[in-house]
Image (tube, rainbow, N blue to C red):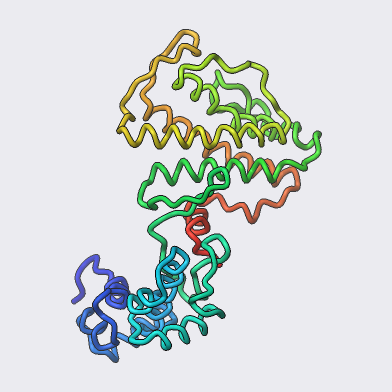
Length: 312
């Protein structure tokens, strides 16, 4: 009788990808199965033999390592190859070029075609800030959510920049507003303005700057420029607070009338919550205006995979 809650396929996959189990016999032993039954069961569920799956995932990892400056020799042995020639041949067959020509991280991804969606996932995320490339851990949920929010806003603004003015201003959700004090969310103009501008007062309050002008730019190209300025400032502030573990710090927001106090953690939770809602509203409104947003996937999983070089 099988154990309740036991995920046998996960156990088989773990055995395939374990660092110390390279041969089929070793994989099967790690899963407490005979090589025949181990291979048959895994192939039936994944569409790929254990040896082929392990070889492909390790080659994906090798490509990722090479793109980050690892030597071909170290990468070959880490991938389980006994000779450089064998590794070079396998790599060239899989990727269409030798390992010495893996290219820069931003030039190509490290994933190979897969029948089952199982891939090597980067433990870091590649970012570009003001033309400078950097990598950060993919294990920081807050950093991932903030990054995704900022990138997604930029993507939506770019998608709307050529829309005609009538469609941009058209009321699509009459009398809709998320918060009474924060203005309407009836049109694409309203929603995109909120997405680009709503971090500005928080930045001013936290930094002790003067109250921002009440005149709100509404043209998409103006919003793109503002977002390009706000995004790195918001990200830098996020990093600074996180580095000094300052999320429980409290600010008094004199811009509010009357003044209010907020925890920094409350502010970031507030911003991410309402931004996520508005980003989905913007997608719906862009679609309603005849703009194809099918390629603008809102899922942070898809975004993260692209940022980490998963997509070729």
